[in-house]
Amino acid sequence: MKPPGGWRLIYNILTMSVIDKINNSKRALFTFELLPPLKGHSIERVYKAIDRLIEFQPAYINFTTHRNEITFRERPDGLLEKRVIRLRPGTIALAAAVKYKYNITVVPHILCGGFTKEETENVLIEMNFLGIDDVLALRGDPQRGTKTFIPEKEGHPHTYELVKQIIDMNHGKYLEETLIDTTQTHFCVGVAGYPEKHNEAPNIQTDLEYLKQKVDSGASYIVTQMFFDNNKYFKFRDECRKAGINVPIVAGLKPISNLNDINLLPQTFHIDVPNDLVSEIRKCKTDKDAREVGIEWTTIQSKELIKEGAPGLHYYTLGRSDNIARIVKASF
Ligand SMILES: Cc1cc2nc3c(=O)[nH]c(=O)nc-3n(C[C@H](O)[C@H](O)[C@H](O)COP(=O)(O)OP(=O)(O)OC[C@H]3O[C@@H](n4cnc5c(N)ncnc54)[C@H](O)[C@@H]3O)c2cc1C
Image (cartoon, rainbow, N blue to C red; front, side, top):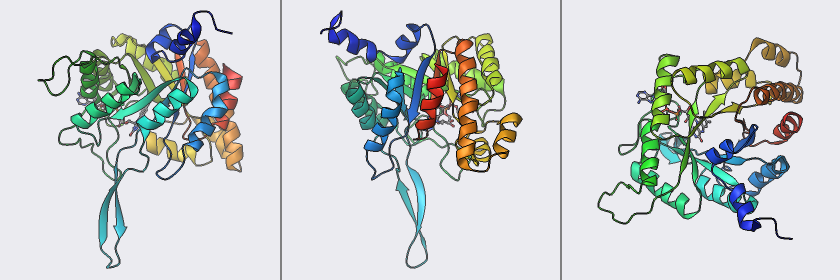
């Protein structure tokens, strides 16, 4: 039986851009983020993770991008050999494969770090050809083992410049100004926000000014860094509004999934883990126990965020989705 309006209409709804989905929804959207497989591993792992979550009707799926890393290998003569390797390539192809397998909106991440402006333009052209109109624009962290972010010689130092480049393409403006009759892309751009401040920012006010600069450059919505205390999200939302940042703010959530997360996550993501949660994890004897606590904690967070009007909940899966399935089943 053909649905009212036809299959094309259903497909268009399923694959609407993120901002249209947020604006057309009366309640919080469920979304999640996946990593491309490590080089040499199969896409089937990603499909498995999605298969566990697809019954909860995610509004869209994000795919992280991982820049090249510098590693050192010891040679037989004892000297170290410098190597540059991308451990998780394939973000755009993966996003396209998922889009057409599941008929779903996909949001690949795109980075300043490791890419020249021209390489970025070429990636965006590929996305446009593949029918991918959503992107999360990010700077990327400093190279592993270094403290300062260094852009490529012909790359962007800050995300707002990357946002501008993408929006320029929406106006048919490419890097090569002599091009004529250029096609206009239709990218909907999201950017990152930090309820507990980005670790390099001198203070929250300055960080908010730069966040506003990203939005003023054309970003349509914000996705937050993970947080474990909802009050941090509510305060951040209020501060954004006071600073004149009025776009939707999707809440980023990550369930604790092993005993070491309470040490590792603050080190890696520069966030606080509340004392109550630390106490509960300390009582656990195994990673499995800690995982249960994580599920319970994030479920409580999710229910409150939905009740308090968060436009979307974005779960960081780090490749595992069974815990997210339980949280989403209990919360939405
Ligand atoms: C939802 C989400 C998804 C992510 N996905 C990925 C991913 O897929 N791959 C990956 O490598 N990383 C990812 N990250 C991590 C992200 O790349 C890092 O947090 C990075 O350090 C900052 O990126 P940004 O886009 O927020 O940077 P920016 O907005 O550029 O900000 C970085 C720092 O510079 C400051 N700043 C901004 N603009 C200016 C300016 N004009 N002048 C001076 N200072 C300025 C800011 O205050 C901040 O301290 C993700 C983060 C989040 C929250």
